[in-house]
Length: 386
Image (cartoon, rainbow, N blue to C red; front, side, top):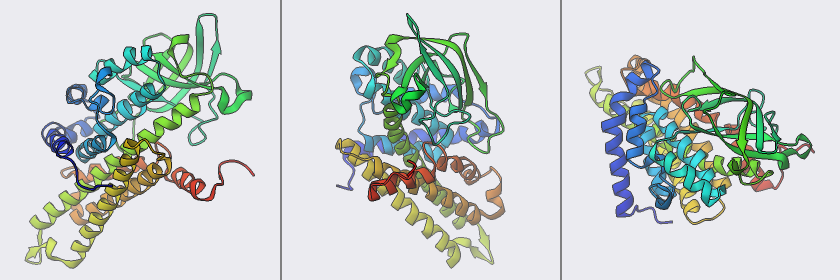
């Protein structure tokens, strides 16, 4: 792997950094304070091509490779994790699923509207009683003469209150286990599809999170993504893409922690000199730098493998596990460098700390990532009873 970015990739990264500094950073504090999901900023993301970054241009996307996409997400993550969540859900979870599993008709119907931001999408896998054990879906899809009727509930769904199309995973026959799962592209504009805002979150205050109830929601046959039995594979392939974008966004948090800590430590004086001159402060900054570099290299490796079309589930899990845990540690250390000033939102490290904690939970917890890695090296699936 060549660690030198191409001229095009450097331009993509620079453009994303400028966009983040000019459009995201200035709004992030107030949007978080006001718990404001910024639709105007979402439109600007779409105009930049970030809502369909990895989608080919023939379907309205930017046609970026995964490494370039990671560079974009890193910069956006440095600015605001709530904004990064929009990009991750729209591009990595929704668009990637339709791109991989959809028919040509489905791709042309959905992708241009999603890439342009005309429609937002959400990914309805998690349920009130179903998290890591994704096979055990209680949401049911029943076949009818004209299509399907879905009944059930989903939980912790990012952008669920604003989505025009929801990818809903539902069981068609519980006796079939994962072979009975289907993924349905659901039009949210119907009476049986109801959402409710989930409030009082620890972080991601500027991100929309919903609970969804589905009561006799109708779906046409042509809006089944793949076939019945493909649902679990659709979910896992989307999570591979989603984990990559979460990891890249966490590299951005790590980088933001380094930059903010260096800036503050050079300005803040104690005992007659900048605290950056103290060995223990430099040690904290050095630890953050090492974690940032290591996380970035793991993300780049995963992106490289994706661009090569090579298997990368394990490498993506490694990147997700390390980058998210590293970002939690960096955010904690950055607050320590800032002292009391880091405990209020005058500095972004306070928001980094609150926002980053969830990254070790969604798209598969850190413990699930370890089981994926363990299964890869031992050949034994710890999730299957002996």
